[in-house]
Length: 247
Image (cartoon, rainbow, N blue to C red):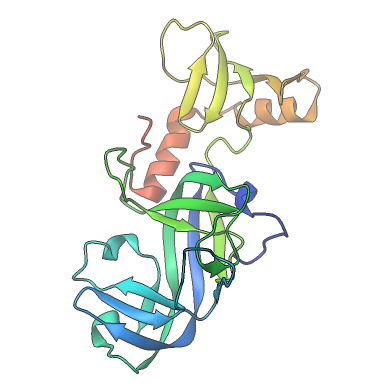
């Protein structure tokens, strides 16, 4: 993705992020077609000659509208997949597409896929209108945020952007909570599940106490002086047209 540092790139994203993805359409060649897939020479990644047991031939299969995978694929061709035949020249890229991050996966050592670069992280995204279903084995799309594809990812909304995973807070009612993700809250009293009532007071970050005068504590106080968990959820659902899988 564009704008990545030399690391895995995955630290830029977290579960719940709403992104707009786009990749400039790049010319390539059609190498094969079936009723369900169009294979093109992938114009960005390179073959990994050291990948034992995996031999990638440089082609990438894109589903046609006849395939059940079509709605999960974010790359498209111009002309459309159904208009292509072997030997044709086409362009492949991502039109502006809104997705939300379901999970970020890290690999140490980097994952061997047969392609270079070897991904050190994957960002798993779901398209607008789709809620994660744990019963589905294959859902969504994975992106290497440090890959060679020139994908631009614009952050549209990050729920609870003023908190970091692991933060501990107290709410308006004096209950203490641990924040693990936007829709993943854990009350310390164990009395009942739910969500904290704003405003929030930051107690600790990264295991260290956060006094009220600390900049991070002041930022949380300002951000939650108005609004509510329900408002964060409303903004998120309006952009994703989905429900958080934790709810």
